[in-house]
Length: 94
Image 1 (cartoon, rainbow, N blue to C red):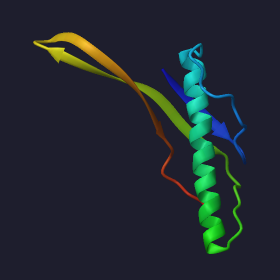
Image 2 (image 1 turned 60 degrees about the vertical axis):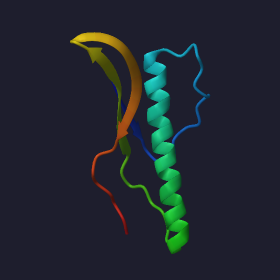
Image 3 (image 1 turned 90 degrees about the vertical axis):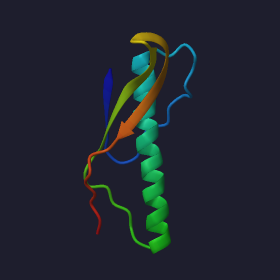
């Protein structure tokens, strides 16, 4: 399952991840959280360099689940899940 998050400007605050959340809610919250962390990092850099931060284009993030399966003699024994996030490799700066 994959989720695509698109945010124009600031990301909305979400409730924390709960045990009752399904896969769709988990991926949605992770996408918005990733964009929020990215925006805060950009704001810190803008403050450091004393420049104005503008976001003329929406931020896009793709979030998907990965399953790491441990096999012995081609028989699946255990698995663990991970969430991965990525953004397109483009940036706008002025």
